[in-house]
Length: 85
Image (cartoon, rainbow, N blue to C red):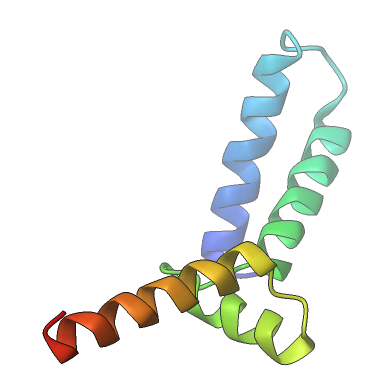
């Protein structure tokens, strides 16, 4: 495991332990839960602006219609401004 992963999991496991009232003997389950959370975060990791996720969804044909409609309005607005309307 990388150092960053270990640090994140350790800090998250500690936070879970505190949230549960600091129970005795639950360290392994807290660590396992934190590790699962870390792996889920890594599996769904996107770029800071989300552009890579948008491209993946477009390629899969699963992008939400609301986004497509908003993008179309932005494109139309840009064209109108460029034409001087």
